[in-house]
Picture 1 (tube, one colour):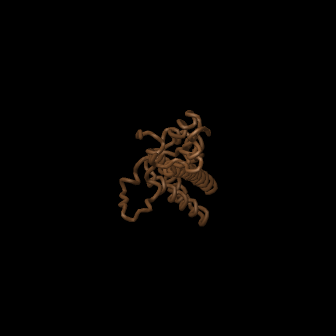
Picture 2 (cartoon, helix red, strand yellow; picture 1 turned 135 degrees about the horizontal axis):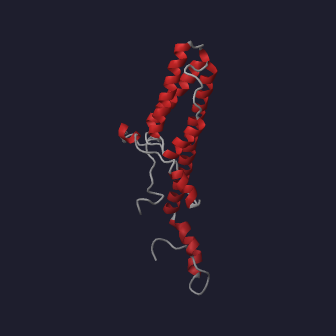
Picture 3 (spheres, helix red, strand yellow; picture 1 turned 90 degrees about the vertical axis):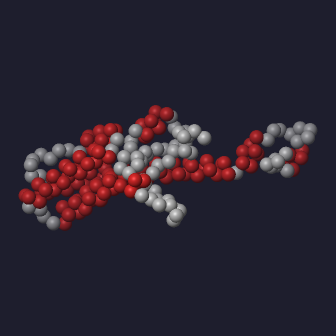
Amino acid sequence: MAPDSPLCRIVTGVAKSDNPNTDTTNADSERSVIPEVMGEESPAVLNDEATEQVTQPSKLIRIATMVRAMLDEVRRAPLDDAGRRALREIHERSLHELQGVLSPDLQEELAKMVLPFSSETPSESELRVSQAQLVGWLEGLFHGIQASLFTQQAMAQQQLEEMRNPRSLEMGMQTGSGPGNESNEAHPPGAYL
């Protein structure tokens, strides 16, 4: 089987192993995650999806969790000028850090979505809108990754079942009836002649 075949493609750093004997290290969680839908789609669609990558999924999750916590904080309590300036700085640093873990396609998409603040000290409503927008974009990214992984897992499971059940393949390869084929109809072919 070729290393680039669909069954050999492995997405790491997102799903945990069901095997309790498997040791998961931090290095495993820092590999690239490629949202990819396998199936009978055109190569152009697959190429577009293959370019949307997250190089450090654990860092992405930490940033997303922090951004959500900041949004909750902005909603809970009023902020003074110093707090709003600090929150703006944290927001901008978060965006900068996100740029480091996203592929160029995702970086471009994020840059198109995020609007710059209008002043040095943004209002609470500006902060809430910016944080909510970033949280929403990150949640959409996570949903896209999950959907791709689910589809990929379902397709791999289907392919595995087809490989495990060679009888279904043999039944499809049977020839038409003729002299000498009567025994094949009564007893489908097995592993031996």
